[in-house]
Length: 215
Length: 246
Image 1 (cartoon, rainbow over the protein chains, first blue to last red):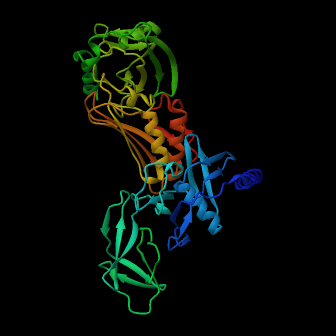
Image 2: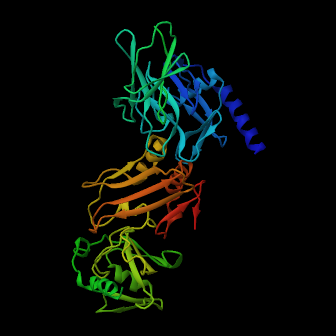
């Protein structure tokens, strides 16, 4: 185990050494853990990483194009969180971010602009301005929807559930968190009073929304 | 139970004529494979390469000591291992992992086909429409000349695995697709691969790989990189690391 860790550490150092500077393409990145946002609750823009990455077996893989995996790598560097790339015989996938490792019925997946791509993250080429969200999902009862918050009128916000295909349906029984305080709304619409700053939508078994900051 | 067994015997020699039985033209030098096992594949009796164009029965008679009944249409014994009505054990056969409902003398082997004889107890379950042990043949060859398209259905957690399986199962074909489903099972430990199909010989097959998320990923990796590791199995069980559990 110690040896494997050392090999991994060495490989990571090696990868850092050969990393090329970003090519300038930027996407929005957010990483959602099971109970908290690990990186970028507001989906900040980041230059997508391209270059060499080390997998868990010490193998090195080069991302020549800006990919969803490159977006995660960029976030990991910026946010200083750990993730692990598993090298399967036929491809790469992320089996751990932060403290959580794929286990039982849950693991790490990603979406680009609300859609779950049918390919591995190292094969998904992103475009300027894409929204890339990595999240911890429990698949025991199908794929969980991700929550999205959309402004309605001047003062109100409505929550939508977004499925793997990117199809949106109005979400019911949503708990909004307004400056940290929960506000349960059966109709999925909240109109917060003045003086609020930060809002996001949550619902059991769904992936929490991005953090909305009062305009 | 006796009646069911008799029905099976009748089936073996009453049914005649099927797509494969006609023609039977095979290219010069083309070969098919013959597997003979016991107890749902637990014990291998023999494997051999045979010329394509033979019937499943001829292929067997070419490689093994066979006793037949009912005008040579029903296999009584292979290598001295005899079927028994009392013990409810008999010889059954699959073509590319699919159990046809026609006699073995009626089915002609095409190039690359797998003829698989297995001696098993049928007391619990008579028919075994499709088994996993010839994977990926039910998808690549299946039954008859018409190749069906393959559809891999999986949640995003298995995007990488589904992509690799699509490569193995190939594209093209026509008609109702064969299906390969990857699915997470709540509370599962390890993974299981099972196969089902409809009643007709040429009905599409469905393979279902279910279990914990890491186990399904690892098992898919095993299937893609070493499909022969589930050879001869009726269904396959995998541990969390994707190793076969026997």
